[in-house]
Length: 197
Image 1 (cartoon, rainbow, N blue to C red):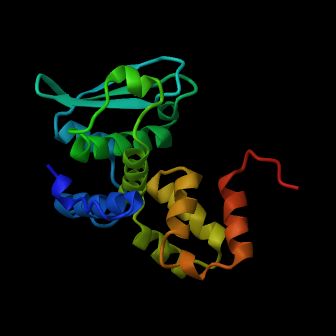
Image 2: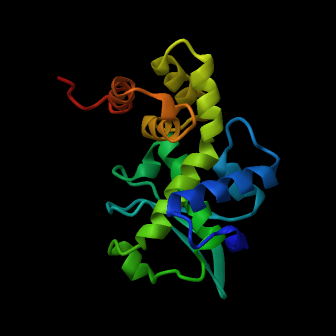
């Protein structure tokens, strides 16, 4: 169990980043894209797909009499209905399996939207860092002629959403140097479906 890595005094996103870096090191995959579905296959953790019209994307389960396993909602409105959303959701659920087994909620509470905020923030940061490490985002941006070009390269190479790319660039060492107009341009790039006036 990786829970010993969790510093209770650290912010949830710091915990998630640290755990993701540790997982990549353990896997010997500190650079490049990582395929979470392959991790589940290698670990023989089954992924059960269901199609429901609900706001729950997935549930990780592991107890004394069952699991580990993932139930993945592939309904049209769920995040896992897209390839990048599926990858992000699986990475998110991997974090829950690694460190959130002792304080888990009953299924009925999860379905009611009662998942603990700190655990969700940690799992979101973990998923982003596992799929697109901040240091690699910074390296790509520094080596590119334009921020949009770098962002597009990262989206394609790491197969993550534009929103994950935006967060990882902003939270990287390169992001600390971005001007307000550059941050705004990156936000516009990450939300292509929004009307920009």
